[in-house]
Image (cartoon, rainbow, N blue to C red; front, side, top):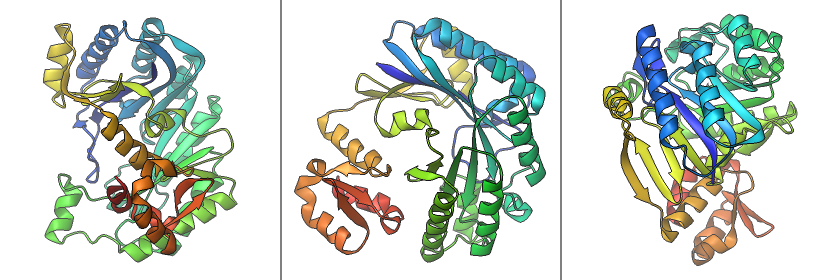
Length: 366
């Protein structure tokens, strides 16, 4: 049963140097309209599936680059075509420089009830190093406008581990992030993916990434500071006030079924993972001909399912059940002795030190 629907809006004013998501730096209103029409057609291609939708999520790219009325039309199409639960979490990602009160009001009236704002930092020097075009004032104004429009469930994205960033810089950012009346904060460590401009700059020596020791100190500071301010970590990169965990992302981490719509979107339905083409022209051509734009399919067998339960479960603060890794207990005891993990209620849970090595630990356990 499909519980989540993700809609990818690939357009951006400017592609950030660290971003490895499928996005197109364009501001063509005609193209936006054609793309929205194509996604609505893709919605209808799946109307025969078994739906009980708990969450709808607009990600990107920059969903807030298209008109709010276009987002509303997509929401209405999904609500019309798919069976939904009584109270659906509907999230829209927002870039601070793109939305003001009137746009938020349109979304609120249409049933959007969660906003995720890509703040990244409140320090100008960090924003410039990240290639962001908005200012700290833009973020504050965006939060104020969302609140004015009636939004209560507001999340902010933070990036840490930026070249030249100090612990003091991070403390200042945390102070500013938590000074706003938001319910959720996602803190992502900056990663230099090979295929991104940032990855190429690191490779050429033009950008210096921070070392593991300071990154661990930063993660611990974030975790401790946010907990002090009433946010509880529930996943590797996510903290929420009581009752404000992101329902949509929990679907991914708990391996629930979800449908991805739009260019490059991924889905997981009936133990099959499948992905749409990353080529925008190909996507629109296929959908407009009434064909699903899927270019990749993978059947998830029992062995792969177990691996995913381990890999995804270790991201969660609740950890994984020990029976999943009973043939790896020597390694488990080793990482427990090294303070990389702990065992509670027959579950393996990573410590902050273990979280920094989560990919390595997962690879050893699967």
